[in-house]
Each structure stands twice: as structure tokens, then as C-alpha cells.
Amino acid sequence: MHKPSSLRWRLLWNLALLLVVLMLASGLSAYWNGREAADTAYDRTLLASARTIAAGVSQRDGTLSADVPYVALDTFAYDSAGRIFYLVNDIHQNLISGYENLPAPPPGTPRTDDYPALASFYNATYRGQNVRVVSLLKPVSEPNMNGMAEIRVAETDEARVSMARSLAADTLLRLGMLAIGALMIVWFAVSAALRPLERLRTAVEERQSDDLRPLPLVEVQRELWPLVRALNHFTERLREQFERQAQFIADAAHELRTPLAALKARLELGLRASEPEIWRSTLETAAQGTDRLTHLANQLLSLARVENGARAIAEGGAQLLDLSQLARELGMAMAPLAHKRGVALALEADEPVWLRGEPTLLNELLSNLVDNALAHTPPGGNVILRVSAPAVLEVEDDGPGIPLDERDRVFERFYRRNQQVAGSGLGLAIVGEICRAHLAQISLHDGELAGLKVRVSFIAGE
Image 1 (cartoon, rainbow, N blue to C red):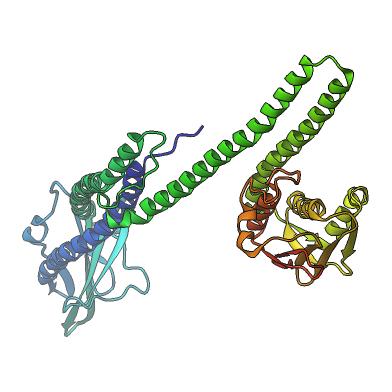
Image 2: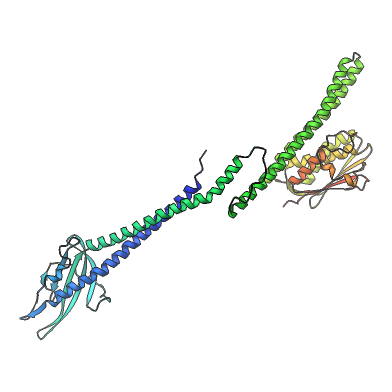
């Protein structure tokens, strides 16, 4: 079986993933921001160098010459972070001084608006290295020379990359420390938040198996109250179920003990006799007692089936059924028993009546209602099985009926009004359980035949 993961570790893992994503995004953002800051800082130095070189450009004998002072290159020439290159072209783009083939500005390169100069900044590759280049135009206006001289100064990007990486690393370091601190805070916070659950678990584990008292609400946070209430509600239902089972077992034991004791006593009495007539009478009595015990056992099994069927209905196992067809089939099955008892069994079900239910339970309900009516109807009487819309079932007989003050008790288990009538006292109790499983309403009324009418109102099916 797969071991469930820890809630604490799951929260920390999800938070750690989120922090890693944020750190990566922040690191990339810090790198590019650092690169922009480095470009801004170093571009100013590039432009200052280009201006210094431009100041040394002069006209002699109709030609331009460039006197490049050392200070123009001293700022970053051959330093530990990068290397400087420069180029000076005359008004005809002929090289006057500097490095050959230093890349020219790409077509469409805009002039900078950050500085008051005719300068353009761009990135290029020179001698296999990435460089940042500034192209500065210097106007030349002499009697015999008029145009724009160009000064290009380039710097390898090691210093800029180093600065951007340093800023990104510093940002990641700070974010990493913050993330570690956040994870530690979350760890302690989650541990503190889960401590009431640990107390709740301990309280449940330390209880005895028969201790179904409600759990206290005062020792847990307000957010855990719904969970504790749900557990208490479940415990209450479980306690009621145990009580019903214990009461049922006690009642069943009592109901079985009496006929078994009577059967055993009768058999022992018959064994002491020597006359065949007494033996035969004893066997007949034992057979009748065995029939009653068999009927009682079947009723007990029916109760177990009702519980299973109710669970199936609750889990969505109900079927769309025709109540009229079920009543018709049950009437045909019970007709021989009615004929044997001298009772007329009639069915009134002209059209289909649909409902959602469990067929085994509904057959059990119909069988118990009709069997109960036949048991209390004298010979020559009548029992009517009636089905009508929207989803109503009625079983009416012309027996003695049930007084109003006893109509609620007949649905109790093992309750019997007339001890002279054979039965287990479980028939109507089973009917009541089946009605509850189907969310149906059952009621007892005075019948038109002066007997009893049992009416069951179901929820009509779609």
C-alpha cells in the first residue's frame, strides 16, 4: 500500500519549489538589470574616452590627424576586467589612427538621447570577443575641409558581465537566505498548527474501544471544529448503531431462546413416553416449532439484507422499477398461500408506476405486507394489493385492524399484538427499515373493509 506523504513536507516542498522559481526569475531579472546598469555606467566612460580622443583630432595641411592622449585609454585599457580598442576615421571614412576593421554601427542604429553628443551605442564582435562600441561623430568645418570625422571606442564586455553576475549572485544569495528563513518559519508554524491534531490523535488513541464520548472542542483551533464535529457526529451514529445492534442481539437471543427451550422440553418429554401416539404428537409439535424458528431466522436474515440494500441505495445502486409489475409478480406468487388460508387476494394496478429502488428490498416489503395481511385476515376475508400514481402502494385487509394507540409500536422489532397469531414480530419492522432506505413514508389507516390499510408513499422515478 502506498504510504501517504507528510502534510508538513508537502507544504515545505511546494513552498520550496515556488521559492526556487521566484529565485530563478529574480536572478535572471537581477542579471539583466545589472547588465543594464553596467551598460549605463560603462557607456558613460566609453563616451568620455571618445570625447577625449575627439578633442585630439586636428587639421594639418589639409589632412586630419589624431593625437590620442593616454588618459583616454587609461581608464580601462588592459585592466583586469577587459580591453579597450579605438579607431579614428576622417571625413571620408579613411583610417587615421587606431585598430583596423573595428565594426561600424549597423544600419539603423539610433543615436543616443542620454547624452548631448552625436553618439551611437551598439554591440558587436571584434577579434572573436563580444564588445560594446560607441561611435561619436565630430564635425569638421575648415576652409578646405567640411564633414564628419568618426571616433569609435570599443570595450570587451568582461567587466559588464562580471558586474551583472555579481549583482545577480548577490540577489540570489539574499533570496536564498530569505527562502531558508521562510522555510524554517513555515516548518515551525506548520508544526505548531499541527500540534492540536497530534493532541486529538493522542486523545483518540488513548480511549477504550467502547468509549464513544464526543471529543472536546476547547483544545483545538476554530478551523478544526468542523472536523471534530464531523468526528463526533460519526461517533454518535456509530454509538447508536452499536446500541441498536446490541439491543437487536439481545432481543433475537431472547426470541430464539424461548422457542428453542420449548422445543427441547417437548422433545425430552416425548422421549420419556413409550406410546407411538405421543411420539407422533411430539414430532408434529417439533416440526411446527422448527417452522417458526426457520421463519424467525429468515426474518433476521432479511434484516441483514435490508442493511446491505440500504447501503447499496446510498451508494447509487438504485434501479428504475415498475412498482405495478413488482406487485403483480408478488400477487401471483402469494396467491397459493392466500387460497390455502381461504382469503381472496386482489390486485389493483392498471398502469405502470415507476420509482427508483432496490428490487430485492421492494419484493421483501411487498411480501411482508401481504403476508402480514393474510395472517390477520380470517378465512373468507379479503386482501387488496393496490398501486396508484404517482408512486403509492396500499395493502388493505378486513381483519381486526390495529388500535390507534398501538400503530407506532408495531414497527418495533419483535413486537406482536396478538401472541396467538404465528409470527416473529419482525415483518413490519423490516418494512419500516426498507421504507427508510427508500426515503418512503409509511402510514397506517382504517381500511374501507373495516380492517387495516397500510399506505407506502415512494418518491416517483424519472
